[in-house]
Image (cartoon, rainbow, N blue to C red; front, side):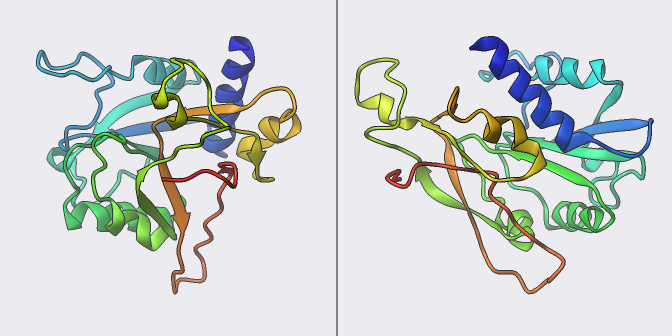
Length: 212
């Protein structure tokens, strides 16, 4: 099961980060209490993202930080293939949001991961991309992993429902063999945007009887 999950993670990121050039750079935002990719501050209580950084570096990505101090309010560097926003604790400045949205117009990929225990309002960034975060964490009375045999397990939801998007091809083909499990996850929904070039697609959906 573990090897299967590793393959799923690898295939997902490969599809997400596939670019037509050999020179690849991944930026991680900083300055908002974001999760660190290196050594954490002595007061930090959250784990750092060494495994994610290591995986990217194995694929020949250069991993760098992007913050106000090095231009996030002005322009995303031209060499950026993807920008990771990982668990920020403080909201982004309007100028930072505008910079990131402008970069998506030229093909920049964004990976946004929010902590359910500290869901920072990212509506200014996600809204124009056709997405909205709902209040509360997902729960299911039946489709859950019985890890503790307590009510907490209802928030450890699993799903086998995937779209036809390339990032979840392996999942869709093997959904009778294994599922994706999320623990205390936030819920996303699509929303209407006037920009016709924006298309939001949910690549993974919770079971229909899931609630918040």
